[in-house]
Length: 115
Figure 1 (cartoon, rainbow, N blue to C red):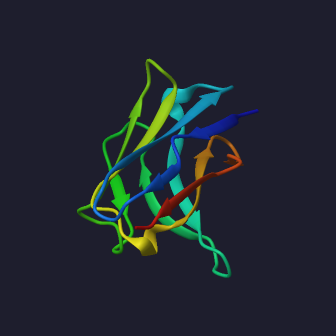
Figure 2: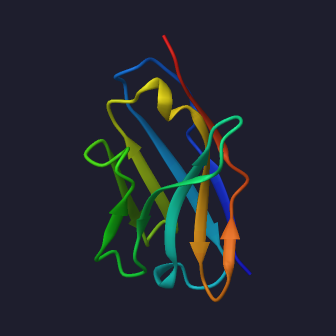
């Protein structure tokens, strides 16, 4: 089975940057398809970004395209989400996701963008 642990969330001012990390264990990390989702209070969970198992392809929601970048480091078994030019509407709990012969989710990390 796969375990995912997010970190890096916090409170930032609009326009600033933040990098989220997701450490994975179990299975073969280099073969995971992975991504990020987020959920704001009172709203449905939405897709943010994803990366293919080999890192060849990345995908982004229109709301974050050009501001966020997803990457993975196979040597550290870690997925990243670099978030730049943060806006108040980016405030949400961010969840790490992996597919490896099944769906796996992290517990989430809070990102709050406020002045």
